[in-house]
Length: 270
Figure 1 (spheres, rainbow, N blue to C red):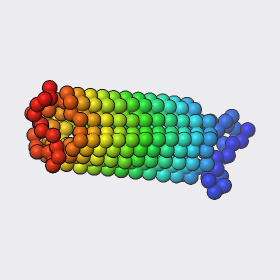
Figure 2: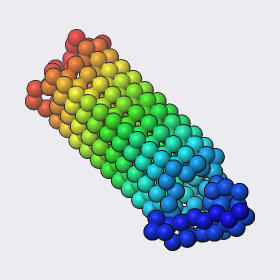
Figure 3: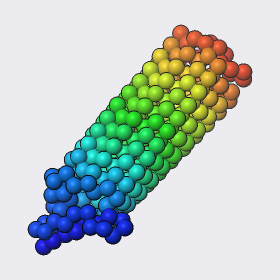
Figure 4: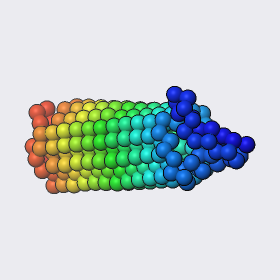
């Protein structure tokens, strides 16, 4: 049977004359390098689809089922993936600038080296997802749930992640300059050698996290929980620590002078 892939304005982008289902039709279009920009694929069942290198700029994939789909190197700039199911999907090197992933489920998905500048992942479920070396500058992750996710060496400058849950996530060597992480849960997270200059972590839970050798200059930790956190060799010049809980924190060899209202950086810490 024939299957049409249409643009959101109704135009036919591709006609697969002998495809058995939409997955097969899309695979055929991708193999023929058809430009599927603006494709209307809402609610589509594309589980395990082979879409490597697909050209889906501005496509509508809201609530689509893309579990374990291969989207490596796919072009998804400005695509709408609101509420999409991407658990276990491969998005390595994918282009997702300004894409909408609001309330998407992407548990265990691979975003390694993906470009997500300005993408909106508000409320997304990204537990255990891999974002190593990805670009997430100015992305939105408010209320995102990313426990145990890997953000090692990720560009997160200016990210909006208030109330995000990133407990036990790996953020080693991440660039979090000017990040907005107010009231975020970073308990038990690895933040070793991160750049948190001018970041807002007011009211955040950083209990038990590792911040060793991180740059915390001018960061705002007002009312944050840093109990049992490791701040060894951190630079605290100008950091705000008013109201922060530091019981049991390791402040060995910290340098810099915290801002006004900060507690002393010696005793009774471990």
